[in-house]
Image (cartoon, rainbow, N blue to C red; front, side, top):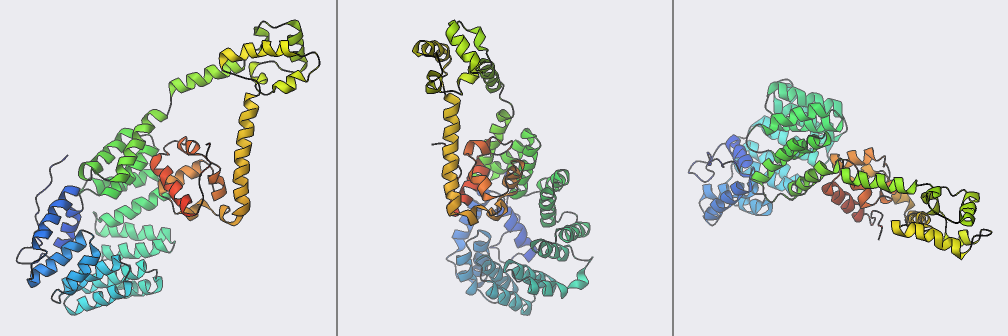
Length: 438
């Protein structure tokens, strides 16, 4: 694990850091579990203090750690300031209390907050609340920052994106990068949209720009790992996940994905499995004429167009015995050929019947839930990785999906346990499940 930097910014010093410095501290603290623990310990040392500056700092610290309910209570007790109202708005927004968040952003202006920053945050808050009309109105109010502010173009891109205006969104993200080359948020969303459009080369390039900077950007590393695995670059994918686990050793998604990557390294071509499959096919294609059978048995099989061992697996004992001149003696001869090879009469028919019954069970579900099963898999709101795998398997509706087993999905290249669990949970929420062979 790489050594962790010492804090360059002290939230609890006599003078409160600037807003930009607090944002840098936020990214640094959440870049690793160790940093979170260290910062949490520092917070606990100050949480019971009652000084005005400390109360404000503790409230901001609680927000940084994601303890939003506590942050709201603490910040409400702080002395009025632009920092108080800004971070109170941020915590309220996380809690879905959008109207209160807007009120506090407006109050921050009276205490000297930057007008452009507040306007952009109001636009973001309205966007989170799905009030796109008001979000657009806020952005129009600062349209004079077009081609001037990277943050303006980033927020305009986010609003375009949620409204399905993907080309416009990408243009705004590109403009943000022209104005601020290292704008991580614009880079991330440009990479994400490029990936969705199938432009994996561009997506990888954008993500690489993010992950080469400090601190660790977990979402970018994981998305980059997914792209690397999709193109068979398993070692690079593994290094991305190792970097995530180096700073977040208990990150559950990364842990599961690491297992997927290791499985992919051996799943691409199982030579031993292919050899066994080839040997089985060779056995089933063995001509009946290669075995020593009585003339009666041989003639009967010939008249029934049974030429190979595989043909015998498609006929039952009863069918053989019903044929003229085919008796118990001939039946024993046939069984003596099959048993040493762990085969039996009617084996393939039984497998087909089992599959038919399973499909029949699912068809009953379909009758009861016809409307639900006709829905698109897009309605499941799956991750990019899971959606790509379903596209490769030509699965478009929920009905297509519930006919698949765990094994059939895992058989798709780059489809791992993480994606499987995601799909099973999404189906489970709808009262559905994948086909089971039990």
